[in-house]
Image 1 (cartoon, rainbow, N blue to C red):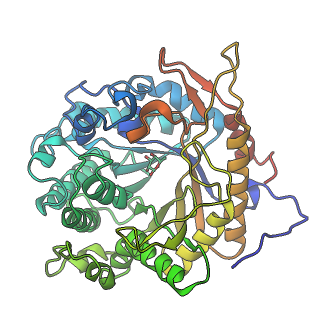
Image 2 (tube, rainbow, N blue to C red; image 1 turned 135 degrees about the vertical axis):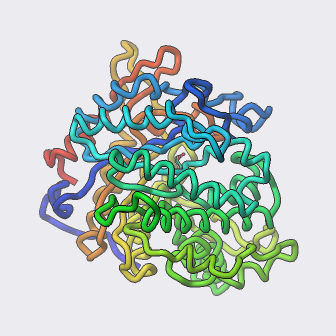
Length: 461
Ligand code: FCB
C-alpha cells in the first residue's frame, strides 16, 4: 500500500509529460437534446426514460442543455478553458436511425459542424462511438444479448470512420461496457431495464465483440489509413480495497475485480474470461463465445481509457446474493454518495498499469464529482469549493502516478456542463459549468476558473 507523497516542491500541470491532453467530457444523450430533430431515431434511453419510475422526476434527454443547437457556445467555453480536447459521443440513432441500413446525412453533418467548430479553436476531437444510446429498433430485435448487435455496431462504426475520419483525432469504441451490460440487463437501473443475469453476460460479450470488430474494421477496412487517429476503449475498471485483511474480505475484493474489471480487461489482453466467476452462479450460463471471438476482441488498441470516480471498499457478506458488498466508508462523499478517495486514483492507475503490463498508454477519460450546486442570489456565480478540492486532489494523485512511471497521456474532466445524469435525471450536477435548465443559460462555476488556471500552469497542484 502506498503512502501519501510528501513533496516540498510546488508542482503544476507543466509537470505532466509534454503534450499531456487536458480535456472535458460529455456524452450525446446527456447533453444534445434535439431528440426528434433532423432525422434522429429513438434510442433505448428515449424509451427507458419514459417508463414510469425509471428516471428521477420522469426527466428525459429530450432537451437537456441543447448542445445540438448551442454547441458554438460550449466550444467557446472550452476555448476559454484552454482545453486540448473535447470528448463527446456520437449518437448512433442520429447517424443510423434504425441501427442498421439507411444512414442519416444530417446526423453526420452535426458531428462535422461540431468538429469544425472545435478545430477552428484548436481543440482536438475525442469521439466515443457508443455511450449507451442504442437505437431502439436494435433493442426490439434483442439488443446487446443478441450477437447480431455486435455486427451492427461494427457496421455503424465503419460508417463513422469513413464519414468522420478526417474530423476525429482520437476514437473510443465503447464507454463502460460494464454499465451497458450489468446496469442495463442485470440490475435494470439503466436502459433497457432488464434483469436477467445470462442476458447481461451475453450483452457484455457482444459489446466486447463489437469493440473488436470495430477496431478490425478501422485497421483493415476500406478507407483504413496507416497514419489514422489512435483508437481505444474506455472502461470503468475497479481495483477495490478489502475491508480488512481477513481472507474472506481479500477473496471478496478479488471476486469484485473479476466481475468489474477482469471480465473486460482480460479479453483485451488476449486472456479468456475469468472462469470462476461463472461457476458461482447457479442461474448463470457462460457468455456465448464462438470460435475466433477472443482473438477478435484482443486486436491491439492504441490506448486504454480509464474512468474513475471513487475507490470501493469491499467486504464479504454471505447474506448478499453476490456473497460480498460495498463496505461503509469513513470518507466524505459527493452528491452521488460516492466516497472521495483521491489516493484511490493513484492506486488505481498503478494497478491498471501493472495489470496491463504497460501495454497501452492510459487516458483518464472521465473524473469529476456531483455536488449540490446553486447559483449566487444574483444568478451570476456558482461557488463549488468542494469540486475544486476534489479536482485538485485527483490531479495531484494522477501526477504522483505519472512520477511513478505510469504512462498517462491525458485527463478529461467529467463534465463540461451539468447534464442528464441517467437514472438521476437533472438532479445531479457534475459540470464545471452550471446549467440553468429553464432557459439554457450557462454559468461558469468556480471550478471552471480553477481548471483554466490548472491548464495554463498558473495553479499549483
Ligand atoms: C459514468 C458515465 C458518464 C457519467 C458519469 C457520472 O459512469 O460514463 O456518462 O454519467 O458516470
